[in-house]
Length: 329
Figure 1: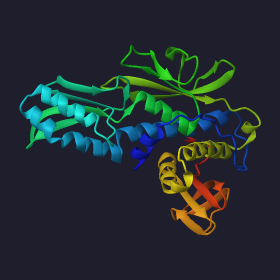
Figure 2: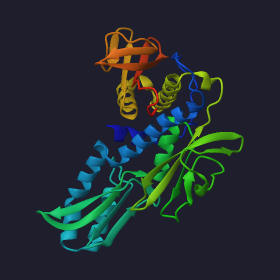
Figure 3: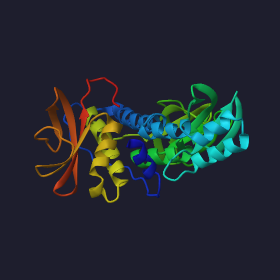
Figure 4: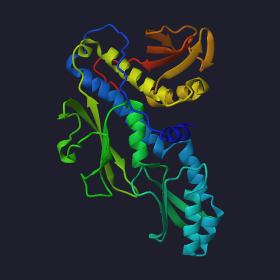
């Protein structure tokens, strides 16, 4: 489900505007830790998106398409390279499947390699006929551009990719203009590009078929008055931003409340519910949920963010509260 939703969301361009509304949570001010707190949320979402490209229901389905292809397995069993290529081409371009690149090998030799040039998050496995290994594959369901679009649209911050298949540190693609040199970007470092200041968050990803991609997220530096809010409020405001960006990808939203709930829960590790007055539109949850603040449910305390996209329908996002000093993602 999540993988299918992600694929549909990279189609069509809309500007990513960072949502700035912030719920009020009273506590001591977060101060200098505000940017790091927001960055922890953005890092979690970017990592979850990447993880979804490696292991999701869609990835499992596409692996089955590859490993269960009778045409491909027969061609490999007979060492028929033209037939292997034809089978791989048919798999990659099959309607409603979303394999962006597929490489098939036999005894380490590439027999077919079909798909785009800049691809991320490869998965690999063995091809067998009646228990006998006849080859192997490397497959991906996402390209670099699709990943960049998803991060940009879900979080609303700049992102750049560096590294293979180009020489390490080479800019591949991204949204921060002009892109800074990879060597100058360290995790947690501050940098200024143009008139804007950012905190860098670095993730490592895998390029196709191997090699490391450096993923650089650029989280805008938080300044007063937002730094006067508690870290809990800053963290919830970051999830507020994510929730609005995700909701903006569903058109019309009213027919996708269940999908929105699934994506928000998967990205946040929290809970999401949609209600219209007392009617539960998507999800169960506690009998009563405040519009903001906290709620106790299933033996723990949750911070609450909510909004009304179309009154009286209200979307609730519940984020687990964390101990003071713990990592904010």
